[in-house]
Length: 151
Image 1 (cartoon, rainbow, N blue to C red):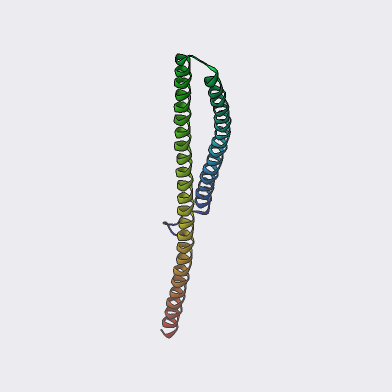
Image 2 (image 1 turned 120 degrees about the vertical axis):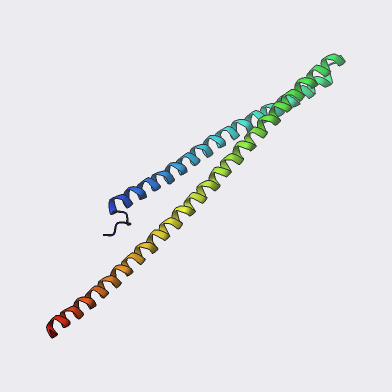
């Protein structure tokens, strides 16, 4: 075998490591996706709770006669809306991060397949060159035997 070609064992180790990396990436992406889905469900539940709370506050505000109490309830409601909005913005950023990781995973997968194709082409080129050298060696060997026989 040539000096520049990986041994079967090295190639196998490289393939296993690459496969392990891809599998770990997929598992990590799945775990992140699952966690984000769980958090989204919690956020939806919290948003429903806030909506119900808001409706309750609105009904109470209609009953109360004092303006100071009405203003305090409105301030509290606005603060909750602001917190909910900030929380949803955080979730959106997290989802964008997951999408970025998915895109990176797809890029890595494409690179892997490109490298695999290049490896196959190089293997075919190596086999072809080996055959050519063998043919040339056989021809030179036959020519040498003919020269020896003529002498």
